[in-house]
Image (tube, rainbow, N blue to C red; front, side):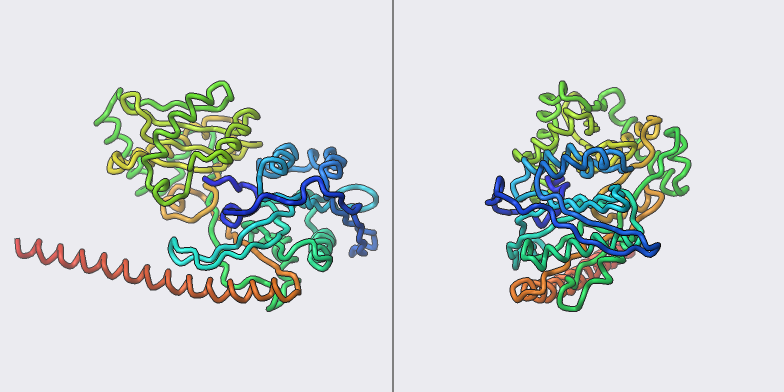
Length: 424
């Protein structure tokens, strides 16, 4: 897990503390377009907390199922996330009524390029960062055109070097509108799409297992039965969802996280101050649902995520590497899904960022997403774009070579094992 879950989980790493909090800002500018039906569409930008508060009534009335797009979470992030400079919320009005809101923030971020774990290049830029699922309300062409007009005007005014759409669905209206405005020089190349896997939760745990393929269902039940037969009553699962449980939760979470392979790689739950503050806030508001698996009273696996308006969004999971062969992490994940399926107020399990083989086996559907970056038409941003495009292409090629080498090594090991078996 990382502390993004704001704009740019990876891009924000190492960002400098903002230098412009409290600065006197220009009043929101208003731009007009003519919609297809002849009505007037107006877009304005909220650049201060006070401006955002004027949108509270409209904001809270719009459908949403992501913690990040809750107005109170958004305002909390402005104060607590160090890379954030100020809000950059676009409100679109038609006939004097706010019909759409784009949740975005002006942030100082880094744009890292890596080969494996080695970071080759990480320019610092000022970005208008659009939150994941950040467009609320109407998403028709006049609305998305008005949004893009105002975002691109921010680049033209020199407010930012780049617009970052975080994990934007490829089939969304906003992706189509942004892509239509991109040029060869301004759009970031080499950004690979990813799959976000989701489960449409049935009303019962048995209903979920029944929805899986025969092989996955049998394998899941067999692994769970084997673990329960081996350890029996020595296993216990505890759920955490309130601030009153925070001390025990963080203590036990750290016991497991310190022994995970993710910690060795510097990813997942790291236990730093920023991550902990975010989880504490989620607990206080009832937006966190976490489970920890214990063996003889010792924590050995955890699974945690955000629960907001019927959607559970996985943030992080991990297990004590010493128990990896027992598949304690997979066991707890399935137990968590089954518990959520039994909750009538939860309808979707969202695996969150990142594609993985096990997600495809356990999920029902996927959404193709990708970061979309549009740079300002100025020398420095364009140079950053081309430099990153070259390095991202190199990284993609290198990763392909590494995957082929790894596959070749696996085939060699299998062949040597078959030859030893024949000799025996």
